[in-house]
Amino acid sequence: MLRVHKPTSLGLAGLMAVVSMLGFSAVQAASALAVGGPVWNVVSCEKVAVKTGFYLVRTTAGKCEALDNTTEGEFEKVLHELTAGQTAAISSSGGVFGLDGTTNILCSSEQDTGELIGGNPGTDLSIIEFLGCAVEGKTVAECGASNVTGMAGVVLTEVKSVLVYPHEKAETNEEALDAFVPDEAGNLFVEFTLTGTSCGLLNNLKVNVNATGTEIKEPALNKKCGVLARVGKLEGEAFKITKADEEALVGALNSEGTPTEATLWKPTAKTFELITCKLEAFFAASTELGISDITLLSGEEFGWEL
Image (cartoon, rainbow, N blue to C red):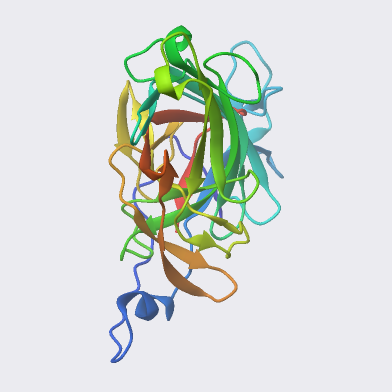
């Protein structure tokens, strides 16, 4: 879907299919008129075919701007769906992240790079670096976590994710979630080793955090789901859920207090599936908690739609 982007709110646009059929579940019924999704929306700076007035200029980063003391531009902002084969580079950062379980791990911050990937539903890929990671109540020197980097308190992992709807709310325009699966071997979400002067019995313990939810085969991630995060934006330092067709310069993902169930569109089968997303660490159920901001490297707005 292509449309010229206007800086004012685009409002809500979407379709809800409500079908009641004897002998069918709510998810199966919705599938009868399904369009799938959610999909990623991005604003891009496109050259106009025919100039009929004032237009913008495009920076080297790909952002449309109106610059003072320049000649008239020839670009305009266009909002469009990321389709199969299209990507948009992103960067992300966040404050305190935690892994709650038998033993809690807290990281002071995180940063990552990756890309939004077009398709129905939309997916994404991220390489995440957690910093300042240690057993809760201890410093990195006392009992820090580390993995492949060999740097105390630094934990690196790579994940993939797919956009989903809340449980039993297929094709709602009120909320979308991102379902994360590992990109490591098997269903290993992340692994790290605890070391330090005050680790006690935990010293040199290697911890495997595994995804134990539903294996996502469509789209072909072929890994179990570990974490669900709400899709939204940051207003100041506050997280706010974004609705369909609501774009933001600074998007955000929030895994704090999220459910463990969601509704996934299966593009080949053209039906919806109930999925669960869970983690296990220290031989017990665990949850990841945190909020991260997301921006396009182009500096333009983005969001999601049905």
